[in-house]
Image (cartoon, rainbow, N blue to C red; front, side):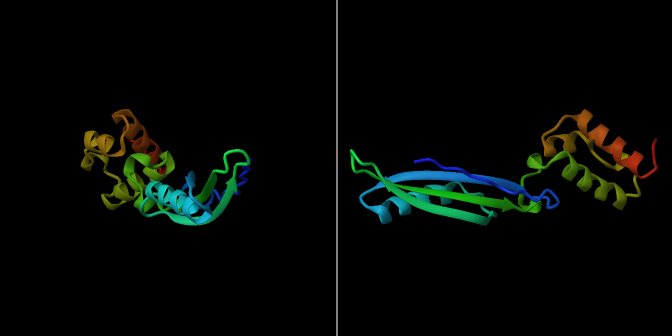
Amino acid sequence: MNLNVTLLLDTTVTMEKGILVEHATGRNRGDAVSKALGLLNAKLPEEAKVVDFEVGTYTTPVTRRTYGVVVAVYNVSPEHRALPNLTIKERRALLAHVLQIFNYNPKVLNISELARTFGVSRDSIYYDIEQILKENGLSR
């Protein structure tokens, strides 16, 4: 069995995008598909929105084994993603919002805690803040 997947990604929408593929054998087509769906659903992120999916089956000619194959394409909204999984752009947008609330005063931020929360180095957080301040004409 060959599988070709072609995706058109909309990069203007900030979402985590993913593809999952699972297969399983079964006594018949329905059983094989049911098992493959169970495997896929166990791996699908909790807040995922399935954009497209395909279900198929095939039986091998010699062994007569029946396989179910499931492919799912999904999106997960950034507000449902763990902070260490955010892109640099998303992390900076969040930091910019916090800085705006505190009148662009970086002294109110705990750099070590932010680095731990986002799963990056302290230098990355310092650089993000520097870039945000430059973008807003507030270089310090």
